[in-house]
Structures are given as C-alpha cells and as structure tokens.
Length: 129
Image 1: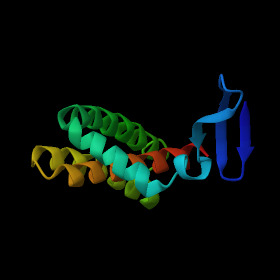
Image 2: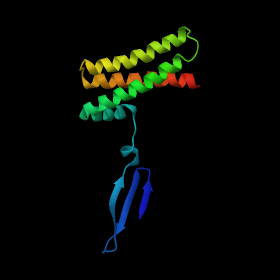
Image 3: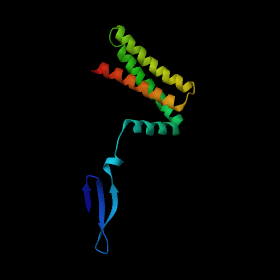
Image 4: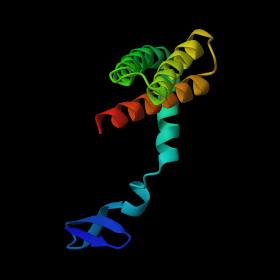
C-alpha cells in the first residue's frame, strides 16, 4: 500500500498481526532537489577521482567541439565578428590544453574544460540558428 502526502511517499505493508507498518519513506522535496552547484560539485569530485580519464576525454571533446566551432566561424566571409568567434574558439580550446600540460590543479583544469565547452557550443549554436 502506498500513501502519498505533501511530505513525500510512504510504502506500507500489512504484517501478521494485522497492522500496517511503514517500509520506506521518500521525502521527494528533499531527495530529488536539484541545483546547479550541487551538480557542479558532484561532477568536480568525479573528475578529480578519475583525473587522467577526465583529461583525456576532455582533450578529445574540447578539441573536436572547438574545431567544429572554428570551421563554422570560418564558413562565412571573414568579418570582424567571425574572426572574434574564431579567436574565442581556438583560445578556449588551447587554454584547456595548456592547463593540462602545465599540470595545474584539477579544479582549474575542470573549470577550463567547462569554459571551453560552453564557449564553443555557444558559437556552434549561434551559427546553426
């Protein structure tokens, strides 16, 4: 038997003494709370635990997405805005690669990866709209 209240969901069972007893109570408002910073901290801790795997995958992802953004920036006739987008795409991808090669702290490397991916995906979206 399941009862849902404003506090959450409680799963009950009927025991041999003919009484209902709770098995499990889930507080949905507390257990499934999502925030950007908690997601960031979980991702950062996973990146720090598997650092070498993260930098390999990060280099591949940043370089591939950066090259797509750079090729889209050069697709049109080069004007100032396209050259600026090319500068941002290449600069952020190179900054991430340089932070890996310079053996900076894992948090700085992770933040560099996020900035590189965000900037390059934003350039791609701007060109596809």
